[in-house]
Length: 152
Image 1 (cartoon, rainbow, N blue to C red):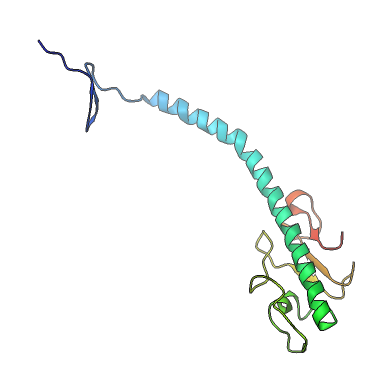
Image 2: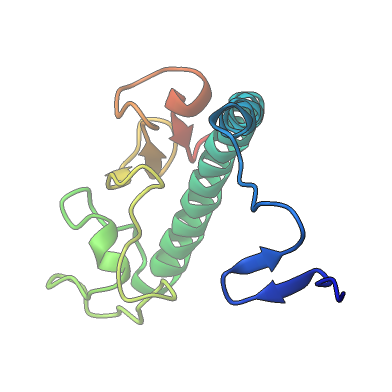
């Protein structure tokens, strides 16, 4: 008499015994383990994400300040508060010696939290002030809510 050898078929593994699936308990144990891993790893990943947004904002503020310096070299002055950072990508009506755009892209970037960068000229802390209020969009704060400024 010939016995069947275990073989793989279209419907799954076919062997001598009945097909066996996972029990509800086994599935729940796996889900609990995955939930615990997500609970331990998730906050650490989010902490690094928050720090990277602040670092990105600092780099963008430095880039905007450098573009404003190039603007001043060409025009002879910084743009006014009313002209704003938009003058780095579009010629203001009152400027003849504009040689821009002064940013690589054709628009002024938003901060990492989706808000426009603030700009004052003349500034309270320097010739111009470029800053973001952080995630909470309110002055002051710590962590992700801290202000990112050009004058420090």
